Image 1 (cartoon, one colour):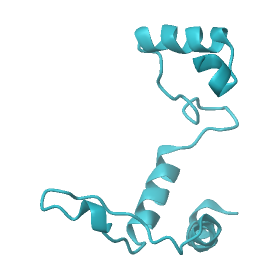
Image 2 (tube, one colour):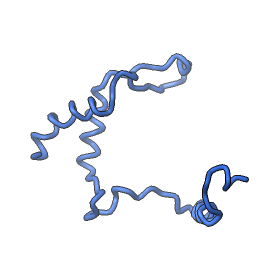
Image 3 (cartoon, helix red, strand yellow):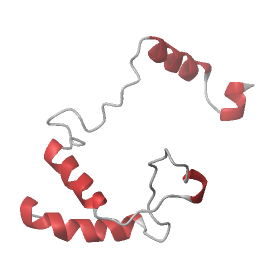
Image 4 (cartoon, helix red, strand yellow):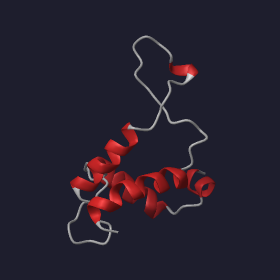
Length: 95
């Protein structure tokens, strides 16, 4: 029932369970230097610094005293964020 509901094969489930048991579920995308998806630590830090500048707010359902959750406003689209990020980094990276 599980596989039919999700539309996946039992092989896919078995592979996922094998990786889970062997602690092999680490996401390695963007980590291998020289691959097309490689992201340098400098670039990651640039993105983090840019996102720190974006105004955030605490959602109403997380306003407990011990909660530090903050989210971006819904009106800020990813495309708008990228358009603001790109000119900021194009000077240092050379786009």
